[in-house]
Length: 320
Image (cartoon, rainbow, N blue to C red):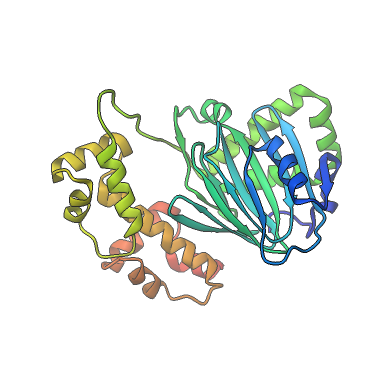
């Protein structure tokens, strides 16, 4: 767990409490003031729940906690910011596009600018959120259109400096007060958090769309790949779904996505395998999970997995 406390009430961030409420509509409205308008719906029979939100704002970045009981949330495409969600307790099932991910105390989920979000939060879930303005991420990463891996493994060695800095701020009442009182310290701390995240998690630049080119074929290809990510599809299948010749598809993919169609498919499968390994409680079988994800060559799979995540799949399973 990234935070030593089991409840946010014992964190220093509780000094930044924005609201407490028993009303769903008020809860949605108050959260919307920090994030953006969205739909918040209780699951099953509505039970009284004392919702709350703590939030510490710094220039370009904010951190906080949210608890509102078992509910679903639907957020339209994020407008000008990135949102990282993990849990102090409980868990959340989050979906962005066709990708479904689990946020826990060990794993966060990153939702990008312009991506929508659907989430289902457990009754005991208490979220820890990090909201980063796109302008600040662009400035700290040097990328015009930053893209980060949506699964954020909080136990990765490269992320520990960021985790430590985040924990120190969230649990130190004096540090929280300094950030609230001194704009210069707030700016310095905010920049540090974003830069440590960029350094530890990695960021790449999405390929800009060339002027005069139509991305419709690429969008059709992406939709087909996401719909059949674990199935035995081939490049010819993707080109047929996109409605263009193989060479046209390959060149358009390289220009708009920066990778080939099959590399994009392989990356999605690798992300799927890692997600399964992280949620299986250490009881999964790497070979079975890899085969179910569509990998036929296990040696190549292991090499690609290590290159993408910095560790072997068996090491991921042992850590879980």
